[in-house]
Length: 220
Image (cartoon, rainbow, N blue to C red; front, side, top):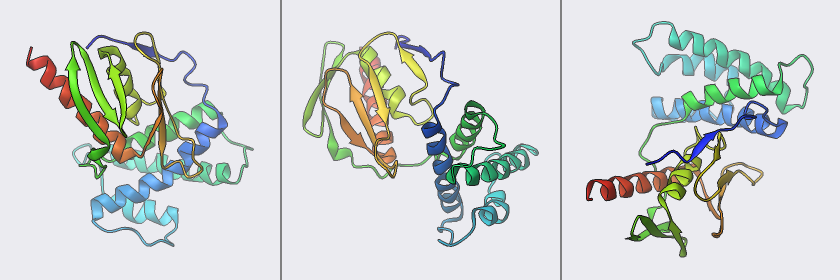
């Protein structure tokens, strides 16, 4: 599919709210990573420091890379201290917002799980290809999306690329965490109704669209 986007020139200038969101995600992703690797959830009252040095350290992502995980754990421990300050709105003696945002985002992207998702596929119903455009129902709302629209939507559905690019072709698409708990993402597609998904549902829709596009391209 054609390129429909370019990197945002001002992406490094994250807001304080975006930084705080990454700091909150940081602990949640550590707990979920340990749970996925160990098969059981850590104790609710376990301190974050103890989870990092006693549990997270035991489950290297790339065991074949000798220094990768020790260096990663050092960065996680450093960010843990910054996180505590951010949660208490203490911004003294901290690196810049843009630097901290990138560091938290880099660590969080490593911790995002690669998994078979439990999201509900029933909310998404592909109808038919209309030429090169896909007609699909999301929560019973009808969407007719051109190839550029589909590419843009898939970029926003993926947590590692969400919000990182400016779209230069197709409809504008944006995914925003609007709720207090940041567990749901509201997706806005230009000229269509907005819809709300969690990360599992987002992954399911992204996978479905990818499969539909592949089938369409290879059937031509």
